[in-house]
Image 1 (cartoon, one colour):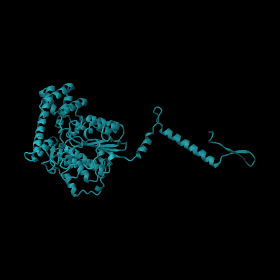
Image 2 (cartoon, rainbow, N blue to C red):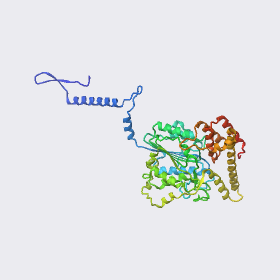
Image 3 (cartoon, rainbow, N blue to C red):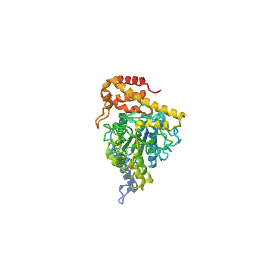
Image 4 (cartoon, helix red, strand yellow):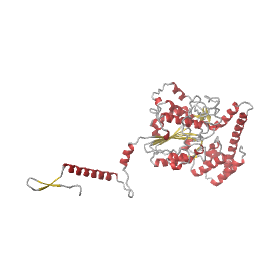
Length: 499
């Protein structure tokens, strides 16, 4: 090794030559040898040949990952628009305040909401949104990441995947999570069997959501994920579809076959302020959020919150109330809520005996999601001054909504009759898959039919979503897609919808 072992020649006492290494040169030699040996050892341990490239061994990767501070990411989605659907955006704004008070930064919270109710002409409190009768303004400070037409399926799924090039419009914010991070997704809106509503474009099918979650899992870009869904028949989004090995835990407001419920509605108890004639929240949503508002989330587990929410929906005490459900990896429920929502320091000294806790065991009056829209128009009409333009407008809105519902009912009946015959109508409307099985076998067929029906017969109230199960049953029965879409177009155009 020329240049490493060099020597000086000196004379010994007998006059002979000897090689003498100075201490400094010896130390330099030893140092260089040590470095070479260390590098060789590292290369041998970490070399995993892939073509001509190398990567760190799994051991070293795990050591590096263990030193990275985990983050919480959140995606909040209100899937509706219009003042009549006030409650969904109110739910999402409230959820944002919980996360913000819990210590999450705005850069880690992605908000999808149409943002058309805070300054709607019907809102007597411009710039204010409340989620309970005596509640604070939950609209303040909410990020406007994706609003208006940017609240759509493509942007939502791209944001979940962390795909910046896949989003169009909006802030461009996406979930840039790593393998140690926790993700919380909360959705609130109208739903139907196998679908979640979106205000722009097509609706989100359970299969498309599941494919996105599987891609996220395959990318190893999260440690665990929690999903809360407020929608009718929301259990159908996960029933028979969400594997237990993806580290995802989901809670839904209803099982696969039943409605979820609005609350704090006009004419009910407790009612919204007299100047707001719309429902302020949804029962499942306000239950977990009002719990999160006061509890120390460092000490409350997800399962404890689930049990409280399940009891508050009072399925045994109210006719028609929904069953809050759990899906996926239920061992995650043993974790503290803090891991997914943070924790408000003001709740560090929460006491179970506090007066606030009593409200969490009281169930407010409820209204079916499908009935919330006509209820809004009825109270708007009743409260308007006699003979005023406002009363005339409210009466027209109420009559149009009832006429639209009649049109949708008749259209579905006609579609099934044309495709399968009148005798098959009850079967297509009422057949329910057994527990543990997915809603439909051919999801492409289902997606085509429900989105065609939305385009042809859809409404702001999303009443048409109650028939998504019928289209699933048609697909399960082997319907010819072109025949069915032609029947949809014909029925929706000939049953005298309101202008």
